[in-house]
Amino acid sequence: MHGGNRVAEVLQAHGVRFVFTLCGGHISPILVGCEDRGIRVIDVRHEANTVFAADAVSRLTGVPGVAAVTAGPGVTNTITAIKNAQMAQSPLVLLGGAAATVLRGRGSLQDIDQVALIKPHVKYVGRPNTVREIVPALERAFHEAVSGVPGPVFVELAVDLLYEEELVREWYVKKTDRPARNLGEAAVKNYLKVHLKNQFALKDFRSANPPEPANIPTHTSKQIQKAADMLRKAERPVMLIGSQTMLEPRKVHELTEAVEALNIPVFLSGMARGLLGKDHPLQMRHKRTAALKESDLVVLSGNPMDFRLDYGGHIGNAKLIGVNRCKTDLTKNRRPELAILADPHHFLVDLARVAQQPTRPEWYETLKARHDARCAEIDAMADQPTDAHLNPMKVCQSLERHLSDDSILVVDGGDFVATAAYICQPRKALSWLDPGVFGTLGVGAGFALGAKLVRPEADVWLVYGDGSAGFTIPEFDTFVRHGVAVNALVGNDAGWTQIARDQVTILGSDVAVKLRHTDYHVVAEGFGARGVHMTEDDKIDAGFDEALAASREGEPVLINALIGHTSFRDGSMSM
View 1 (tube, rainbow, N blue to C red):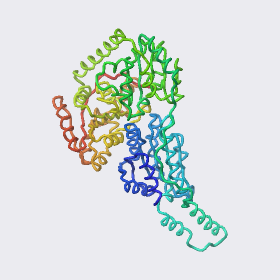
View 2: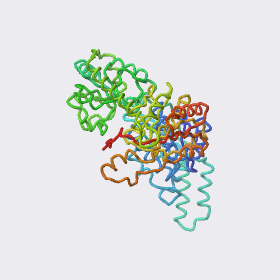
View 3: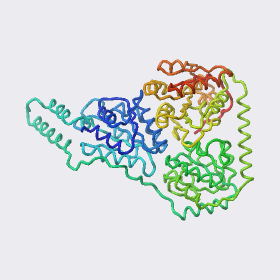
View 4: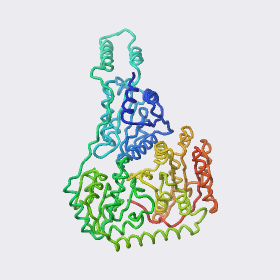
């Protein structure tokens, strides 16, 4: 039983169904060990997408996703995706190959100080030095990933810990098969013998155990009662629910029921989008800033007070209830009147059991009228002609009409994706995936891959800008090879439009923000997928119909929608 099998044993005990990888000799035993245990190995075309896919699995299932990459550049290629997961507080496990334990720092192939490089971006680094240390290191990694503030973890696995003992001994013998010519060489031969003996000694070895419960901060009954009192006295309360509230995917229905029972206007962001389904009377999607400034009590559930809330500037004189697993995020930029270091999901569920809410018809009507007016404004702008090609808002409206009750939206881009966020509504909880606070371009194909594998019956829509599509369009090869029928929509306006809007206006130059109306549908066809070219208004719905029909028959699809420019998102730069 080689070390790769021991890795697979731990993954199996923790309920891991998929391992995302790009092959490398350092990690081959892990991949074969997983295959032998029925864990599906999905190989991609860039290492960053192994982590993005694992991240999506984590968010949608609550079980940490797993990525396995080879040493050196295999690990370095994951850094952006790992940082994205850290900032999104998404639990996942990255397994990295490494040079043999006795060759560290001696110029071995792809040998760099991976631990120093990745340590600032993960919660835990495991580096077993013997075969018997593999299982404990991995088990701790899984536990750390989901405890407290969730996040990514890294376990470095040296190549001589993963292959069979007989083969590793053969490698070592080849390095020392000549007679020792001096005391130094004799000492090295002796050291290697002792090292090998210790490396494969199985004293105190144990098999993998089931996962331990995560350590999660908990609220008190006194905090619940105080929050209930503050809510009861409020005349204009608003609740903001963020991604950290969604860390219990298997209990999402109780969260939905709790939010409905609290009976106050709600704005949803990140992974929380879709929590209340489509057009729920409590959910307000537009004019959030105005609502916050007019409210007298804000409940901030799993959201940091960062740039998305203008560092607290969007909240006027309202009192603030904050609940967050992260102590830093809980008090960032503004200290709440009631600061609760606890899991937001559990807090809201318990709060709903004791909070008796009065009706507030005037407050509801104020927010609803403002929301409806914005919807009407969007509808009117969608009917306006653009400088060329299709109106992007009209394309997004057609996508909205084509969303099934079981669909997942994965968004990866700037201007076009932000437009879609105003128009397209997830139909149920855990049906929206965006990068999170890091704003990372390139999450799309990995997220879509993980989402479709977790929920194969769902229509997975990957909404790309034409800039972001360039990051991961080769993963259509992965979709085709592994039978993952994703629908991708590229809003193709031949430019980095989100940047261009302000750069051209403020600086008077379009340097580095121009692209081409590239035939992305032909690129997808080259990888074996279906391509759809969308250029005419009266063919928009037909294009979506074709894509859905093909994907439901098991064929990945990319729609290349040529779009023009509107003024809808002018002046939208974030700092």
